[in-house]
Length: 81
Image 1 (cartoon, rainbow, N blue to C red):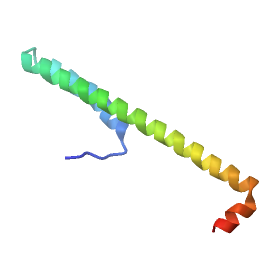
Image 2 (cartoon, rainbow, N blue to C red; image 1 turned 120 degrees about the vertical axis):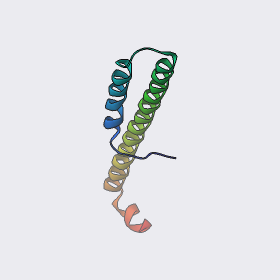
Image 3 (cartoon, rainbow, N blue to C red; image 1 turned 90 degrees about the vertical axis):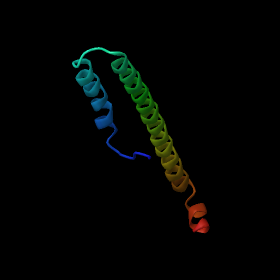
């Protein structure tokens, strides 16, 4: 199952909440394992957010580059259309 959402901040904020809720229940080997899994989820979300941020920045640069090219070469953009 793939989870898709644009509200990444919600996911990032819920991880510490789950950890806090689990830690208040007492300590066991299962609690430690769940804590490790939550850490893995948090790391994966941070990497994904970083990848999205880089992709957004690249798209902005590409759009600016295209815009500047069209401003400097108006005839080229009309011929290509």
